[in-house]
Amino acid sequence: MQNLKNALNQPITIVIKVGTNLLADKECGIQVERVQALAKSICALRSQGLRVALVSSGAIGAGVAALKLQKRPTLIPEKQATAAVGQPLLMEAYENAFRQYNQPIAQILLTKDDFTIRHRYVNARNTFRALFEYGVVPIINENDTVAVEEIKLGDNDNLSALVATLLESTMLIILTDIDGFYDDDPRVNPNAKRIHIVEEITPQIERLARKNISELSTGGMVTKLQAAKRCVQAGITVVIADGRDPSILSAITSGKPVGTVFLPSEKKLPQRKQWIALVSKPVGGIVVDSGAKHAILVKKKSLLPSGIVRVHGTFDAKDIVFIHDEHGTLLGKGITNFSSSEIELIKGKKSSEIESIVGWKAPSEVIHRDNLVIGGV
Image (cartoon, rainbow, N blue to C red; front, side, top):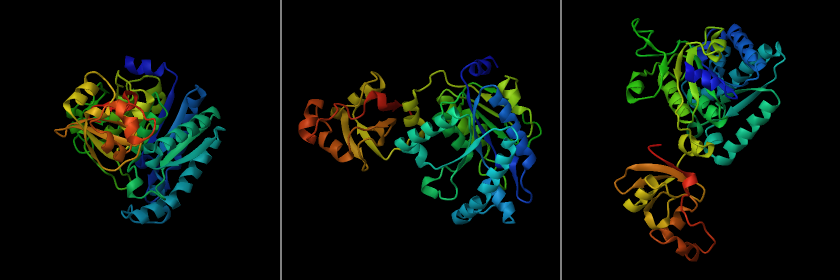
């Protein structure tokens, strides 16, 4: 646990994700006692000087109970309507709980575009920073009321990972109704063993995940592992633990051996490259020859027009694009300085020829190395 204790010695921003099963019941609605216990624990962390953001499920679950539905809806309009009913009930429960400790809270509702569109990503980060400066606990959920399939994140496990990377958090704590990551489903196999520390998320670890979807929640251990994988690449410690234990947050931040700890990668990407690698959505592709492949993979150089063979898709300057070699192998992705139509004109040309071809004073690189992330991202 020494690495976990080392993480806690840094300036701390913690993101906590709490699942639907801990907060809502389809018959009784919001579990007020759980919300109150969670608020008490978070306020204890705040009293220690920690910055805390809470990613909370439960809106649709609360709406199911309020509307007296027999089960969670499956159609998007019905989900949106149920979320619209449940979200204010959920926030009312949080407001009542945190008011007891004079702790101000804020509601933040996000969609995929708030992460994948760069200027919205930066705006969201600045908003969170201002809230932390005011001593506020942001409470975050996906904006289910308006999100359609194209802009949905899909589950709050991955939402919490995106928030954690956005905030450059020290730690993401995923609270669920299981006390960690097991080598099998403990609710089915009584001999399943909890894995205490994961130093690297290997294919074997990924195979252990089982997608067990409950009646009210949308995630499972698969999405929790996806969230952990995203975070450790960004240098963030992840803990999956039992949210039914009211002392669990204190135990985790004290470095006690609870839950499952996923240790962060030693090679942390800079913030901008984290966004490119882990958050951004490519809208096209560039195919490069063997010389350009060697330059960007081995020499760590920028991508120049001379090494470009083909362009896939239609995109604008400043969009994110994939980079493939001529055999279709993914090399990485990055922010292009040129549109697809401009690259069609300058591909195979020398950098010194760019300005005369495009008619404006242009950069010499199609993708600068500072805006280029290598690997199977």
